Amino acid sequence: MDTSGKAITCRAAIAWATNSPLSIEEVQVEPPKAGEVRIKMLSTGICGTDEHVLKGELLMKFPLIPGHEGAGIVESVGNGVTSVEPGDKVLTLIIPQCRECSSCLNPQGNCCEKQDILPCTGLMVDGTSRFTFKGKRIYHSFRTSTWTEYTVVPEFAVAKIDAAAPMDKVCLISCELPTGYGAAVNSGKVTPGSTCVIFGLGGVGSAIIMGCKASGASRIIGVDINEEKFPKARELGVTDCLNPQKLKKPVQDVVVEMTGAGVDFAFEAIGLTDTMIAAWNSCHKSYGVCLIVGLAPAQTQLSLDAPVIVTGRTLKGVCLGDYKTRDCIPQLVTDYLQKKINIDPVITHQLPFDKLHEALELFHAGKTIRCVLLFQGQK
Ligand code: APR
Ligand code: ZN
Image (cartoon, rainbow, N blue to C red; front, side, top):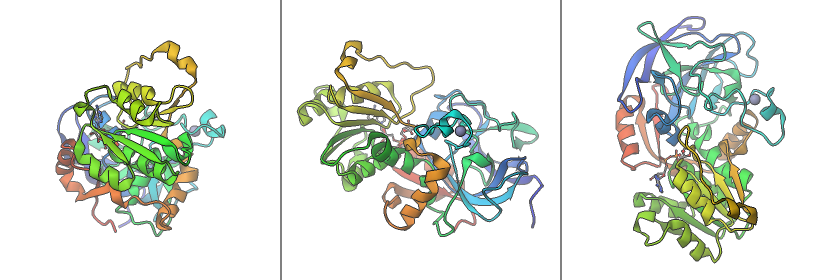
């Protein structure tokens, strides 16, 4: 049946308010307007950023359809769309690439001004939503909203990928893999023989481990309060695991002692200000680089010991691994197909979309690295 130009009724997860249960409902998904793409979702991840949304740590408008790590097939396109066509395999991009804004035009920048995270409008660029439930407007999250059978995304937030990509897995190459792997290889430029510490050994932290390992780091210290994350971290390349709750001293003091004078590279992949400060204080005073990958809650502040800043270490924010997303993410998918990088070890669970609640329970219980939700028709 040709659905182009018509609203589609399908199932989508709606988060009604912060910290309250989601429900899977029948929603209407409007056709894409000019410059937009409607996508049939095939798989989606559950990322720490989605958890920040559900807990109300970002200033988002509810009710909304969560999700941003998505893989799907283009169902139809709006006027003027040239980079994709119906039938193409695509990933949704939480950090888009409009190729027109100051970030996109600068060779160093990648945090496109068309992103809808800081701040979030919950709407498409024209200020309207493509989702309704019983006639009531439902907001988008990050202009991606992937916890739904169909979504509408701006063309600049869509990456066309290799037709051979396994769609039950590559959703993680839309955010988790590049965010962590890129933080190590692009943003940090981790050097062979270096020492690293990674705070948070979830999905993003796991991808950071892979990046540090691929860069030839000699010592990779993993920090997490959930020791169930340690075996996988070790498998990926962590050499020492620390649980801050079991240490007699602050974890940053232990890291400095273990490495003599502090690490070359420290990564924060949790999204808490305390662990950001611990990461900063784990760095070597004069040449350590502290990379903030986690997203801290809205309106929080970092308090650093100001005189110490002058000694020379670097504090660097990392947005999606510094990749210009539409240019680079298709290549990462190809690299995965060519076995140059591997996302398989971080996929600990795959469940049908209908089991979203079970997936969220596993996530909250700390049992998953990444759970991928699969939609009907995915192959
Ligand atoms: N100290 C150490 N580890 C912690 C702490 C803490 N205080 N609090 C939570 N953790 C651990 C969790 O046990 C978990 O293993 O941090 C990890 C977070 O992993 P995920 O929940 O899988 O989140 P992830 O998707 O990896 O995202 C991490 O990166 O991109 C950002 O917005 C994202 O801020 C989020 C961060
Ligand atoms: Zn841009």
